[in-house]
Length: 499
Image 1 (cartoon, rainbow, N blue to C red):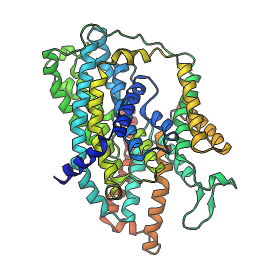
Image 2 (cartoon, helix red, strand yellow):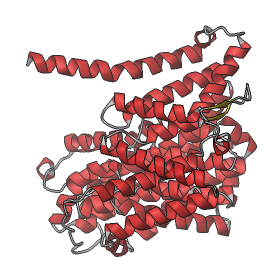
Image 3 (cartoon, rainbow, N blue to C red):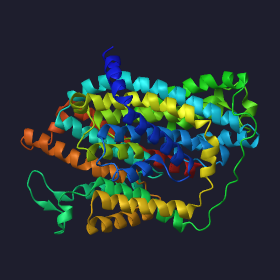
Image 4 (spheres, rainbow, N blue to C red):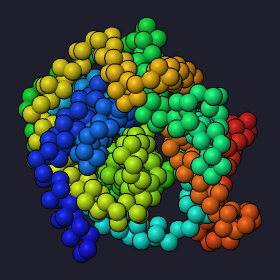
């Protein structure tokens, strides 16, 4: 009951005219970037970080959340119409959605995607409202050794789940941890890895790293791909609305997709890709129309899209209650909090309840906005696909440079932006995940301070990490998560040799 009282107070913040405007801008931008292949919500939030650093924190973070939700909506449009997911989480949607579009049923595919996203997003946001206070109560009991162990879980799971190779994920993480060491050591007052450059004494700016890796790196990578396969755009023929049979075949997949997406998205090793494919496999197994799968089954669109949006709300659970980002966009939102001097976690609920509950309440509003805007404006979203890529990415480079100069007017920041852009390009070229670098830079200094605090309290005894039941359990989970991918890979090779 207390959660609903807090949500009501948050609603008074969310319905303020400026916050409603920020939410509207966020969902429009998010849908637009979700539609455009290769430009996701993480890149967009990274571009906006240096531009919004002087704006109201509540409005900016509401806008970032709107971009996140909108990106999940928009990714389904290209997945259905041109078989090119705007977001990796929309890959499962493309399997049946594009076949529906080719069969002249693109309208019902887009409709079940939009309505399923609304249903799942609303239910999952309600789950966030109910679950967050309990996690905050648990997190308040954490000691410094428990927080360090929790950070280890986040490091390992995020590194192991981003990309195809756990080794590459861990390599990306160590790059981020190394960058997090740059600057003045808070305890000793000595500079580390700054090489006498005064601009590096205040640590590397997360915004500069994020914009360089996501925006500049992506632009360079796209420019390097000279031969791009052109996908045929399927026109939306017939009515956009769903028939009675479509409704009957969609509502259960919406609910099942929500049950997959929210809890898996809330896990430290969650993300949206796993629940969407689980939902697709479930609907394929439970359907009463198995002959439609592989030809354009509406259940194969409804379930994954619901799981996709539910996972977005699930991702906000560890972000807001524990300060742990479990996706690239969540990492960018964490950077957004930090640029205003805010640290997500249990203390944020006590210090800034207006901001936290205003953000949660705004998610309900953003969901409604997306449902109202998505279908009527589908023609506009499709036209975005005709923007020439050279114009698009040239604009991204201009905004990235101008935003960095506005936030930190220094030649050193521009050099760092260029270096990080080249690093982002090389990481994409050789298939290294980007998100663990940002997570390492943000959470690395936090993990270090918690470890050193725990060791100071225990007079340097490292066994303090195993004396706490919470810390010992979390470290065991981190160890299992670290070893499991290598064991499974070894078993796979052994089985292949036997066969």
